[in-house]
Image 1 (cartoon, rainbow, N blue to C red):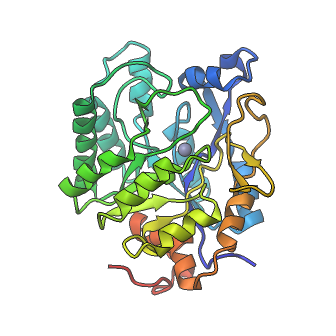
Image 2 (cartoon, rainbow, N blue to C red):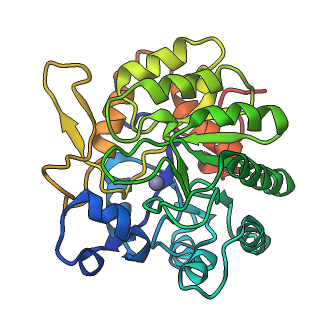
Length: 343
Ligand SMILES: [Zn+2]
């Protein structure tokens, strides 16, 4: 049975890296962290469409990450307008800065994003936000005050364009990446400050503390943020079942604040440890190295949701209704009132 009447994955990478050249044959995650920003990507929509048909996923919010271009994503949206919408990223600007043609500034990155949003071809910005120059594997040090100021410039942009702002609170646990570095930070707690300063701008905590690994420390912080402000959404695609229950049982969080986004297309395999808690979770196994096949995240992730013994209207909010509301997506079959109303 299909798990919901309209299923949207809000975090999808429809391009895949051709990493071999940049990695020079290495399968070490450490090298991937460093090479990420030199890696080129190709159109991976045939595999994605296959999986959408296979698992009954109606729509995807696709977004660039390192190496992946806005251009290819837009081509995919044009080809499959019923199935894809796209977030934009200041990718080309980052490339020019990396090539030494320009010096990275937050104003430069924001101006590039505004230019892209003005084309009206994108529904938002992602993944993450431009909190610093360089990349995840970089060691450029940006002091915390500057990082928060940079985030506030992104919040200004979100307010101006009426788009949700994506805060990449992931914990890949495998890639050798620094504590902060575009587009990611390990610290979800700064969102308290952003949420207070911009109560009118929805903030999505990408991965919401669980990306790779079984450490619940960041997840608890993400819950703490979500329970404190009305404008916070938790992206849950890599949660195992028990983690959903804690969020659903929290009267200040609940189904209306959860959105399903799995990071489909990322090379993060699911690790099984039978008869232990949790029996499965995403882990980048440093000894095994980078997987070479297209990891199947939807089968596992939907199974976690299938185990939830909750009413279907709440399930529909998590699987698509909240995404429809946040991103102004088409509604199933063009019908209205298909989802429970949320203030
Ligand atoms: Zn991602």
